Image (cartoon, rainbow, N blue to C red; front, side):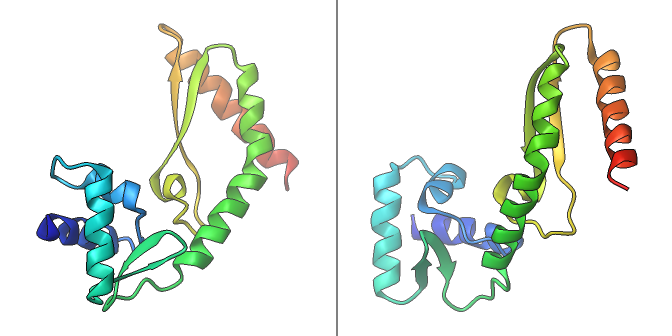
Length: 144
């Protein structure tokens, strides 16, 4: 399990993102319980291979420059965008709006955009796309 855990941590390191134990469990290519992952993380922390800070797991010898700053900036950007995004609920053909990319992991910066995926009612993709893009254009005109 140790090797799979380190492989998962190295994957997240590509994004300078320290995962939680739950995220390690979710993305680790091994069928074990989250409790077993937690126990292994705690063991590796004792031997100094990893460290835990604010429920995040860090490889001890690696750099996660600015993760907590990016997290704070992502939360602020999403907070400011919330009112714009909640207005999309008035488009009746939208079934779900999701956030993807770095913002979905709270790992973006204040300069990043917010990537959305939108699930629409059957047969309404193009009309919904038109309404969402029209709304986006109107927002950009008002916010100038």
